Structures are given as C-alpha cells and as structure tokens.
Length: 117
Image (cartoon, rainbow, N blue to C red; front, top):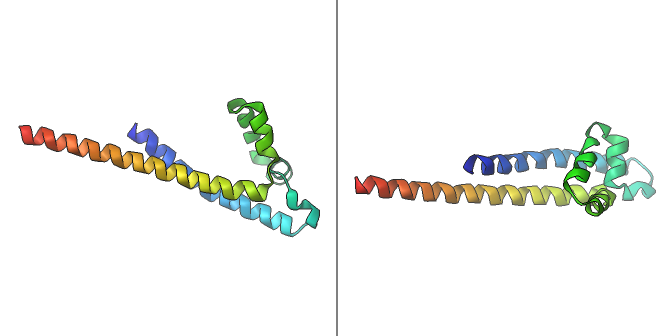
C-alpha cells in the first residue's frame, strides 16, 4: 500500500508540472489570438494545439460517465488547468500524509516488538 500511495503522490506532483506547461501554452495561444478564442475549451485546445495527447479524451470516456466527460472537455482550458493543478497537489499531499501515517505505525510496531525481545 505504501508503494502505491507513493506512486500516486509523486505522479500527482509531476503531472502538475505538465499541466502547468499546458496551461501556460493555452494562455500563450489565447493571448496571441482574437478575444473570441478566450473561451477555448479543453477539447478544442487539445484537438487543435496539442493533438499528440488528444488520446486522453478516449481514456476519459472509458473511465468516466459520458455526461461528466462531455462536461469536462467543454470547460475552458484556462479554467481547467489551474483547477487540475490544485487538485493534483491536494491528492499528492493526501497520499504523502497517508504514507507518513503508515511509516509511523510501522515504526511503532517495530519498537514494540524490539522492546518485548
């Protein structure tokens, strides 16, 4: 369980950097375009500007209910990426706290066993 939680924590933190880069790229695309493109949806951004990761939409439709996936990809990219970064950081911190609790419990049990010897 500890290794799984560490994987969740560090992959969440690392994905925050990728999301930050994509968010900055979306901001750059929007700032260099007409004002009407401000509402550039996540779907349109991925499809038109970073199509090499557009496959994530198919994964989303496999793991989420269809209505939620449609809603998610309709969100403006400039709203989606900051929220995703904050959520990834929160999930990563939660997982690291759980790992810390596991470590404390494990050390406590180890010390009790050592005392009884």
